[in-house]
Image (cartoon, rainbow over all chains, first blue to last red; front, side, top):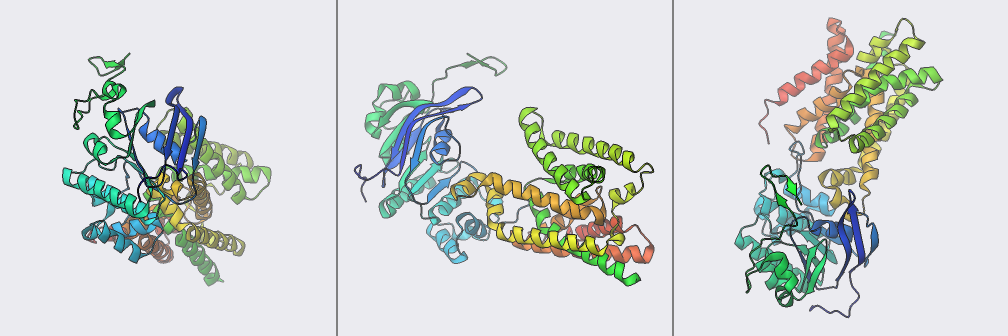
Length: 248
Length: 261
């Protein structure tokens, strides 16, 4: 299903502000995701990307503004999941608990995700990339209309990253979900995303990847070299002294 | 009848271990050992206050446990102290207060040893009913909320997108812990309560491959420890509470010989 802006949005964020410890983490952010659309949040560390995703899913309260989600299941792939080593949990059992599904459904999902070989492995023994793929499989088992992934490609090698982006494209095509991503993987983002939102506590710029990558604000934020490969360096609004303390 | 008090002790201890096993697993998984210890120490204050204001000791224990839970959360957020510091402060201040209040109402400090180390052989028929009711309620709540409890333990955000109220589930776990500690007081006493929660669960970790198996093995291990402890106490005239904990320790040591899965 191609992205269709005329369909009702799955997620609408209007004028969202979130304050933490007297500091604005997000200021007056607008965001919309339609069915079948892949929207990627990019921005430097501390730009509020994770906060925006969590506020959009209703995991944290907004100080100002409104978040509305269309009815339907939400799939969430958090940045990391730390399990205590005292919890005996195979990957298959993890899926059953996380997605509330049967053993058969969990096994089928593992085959589909190319993870059949870790079915009976303890979750704690997975690598970072593997555990993210398991988390994604769990999110997909919930048959989400809206899928949110926080840095899903971190810790993956290049071919695993490509597989991930292909999988997301397939998911969008077959199920028509709206997908919200946080990613540092700018090269892939530009190639596989419908819309990029460049965030630095507020929305710097937003639009089609090509237009954003030509946007002066984007250059300002990322110092991107012209062309598809952007070197990810962000501009600090502070510097560090010799002891590493932040100086404004 | 000599057999009657032994049967009551066995039933009360076994029922307590039955619910302490699965709950102890959550104490391990969620790293709540110090929290459990703080609740156990605070229980003495609850008992003493219960006597002082004329409500049942159990009601006193639950009330104080609730206050300690809230104080732990509030202190951790406000005082910028690590969780173990906060819990140790709460444990020892409530224990001291408990002993002081107890000395006001029972000048000879009669019964203090019973609270510290338990008095399972003195379990009355009414006590047994209270233990049975608590165990039944605890097991029922654990069974009904099992997936939600596990989900919150895995990742609170995953639970939240699934519509599970993480804070409510956390409070349920604290309430269950308070209840089980309250009934365990008479079995092994406040100084040894935590061991009844964590020794069977720690032993079960060695052999279990799923959370459910770990909970079941922990319950069985705890019940075996109660039976063995009572028998030891009968044969050698050991104090019963410590004998139960010693038996649980032996079972844990045996579990170390099992190849870790």
